[in-house]
Image 1 (tube, rainbow, N blue to C red):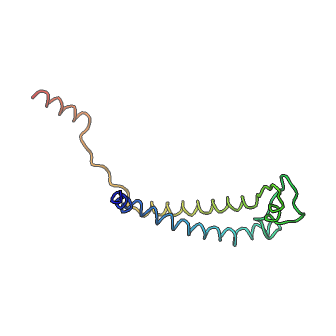
Image 2 (cartoon, one colour):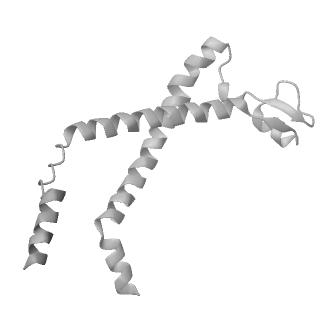
Image 3 (cartoon, helix red, strand yellow):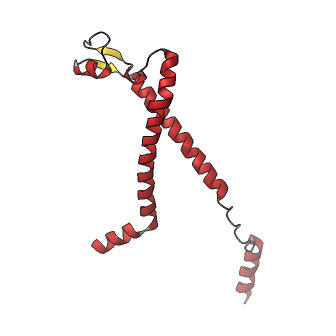
Length: 135
């Protein structure tokens, strides 16, 4: 079993996947920082609030007036944290767009696949079969 595991780990696809996951995690942190520290403050300045991620609506329970999202949750209120959701959606869209650009450039950089060699046509194959049957 240990030998099979070594063979599995030594395959190129597994190593490539591991590297991709590690780089993707680090890149996700960069995108989160971009969203939280650059984009959301701009959106918040347009909306008129400095902390967009703390926007919520109390669905049930009691929350102190003007309380932060964490304080409302600690008070036992059920909240709809739409600001956090919007931030997560923006993170996803930025990440998806950047990955799209990377894949697009990688596809442009790769040479087009070589055309498959032209084999015999169906008529040629049928002719060969006919001639083989005659023999």
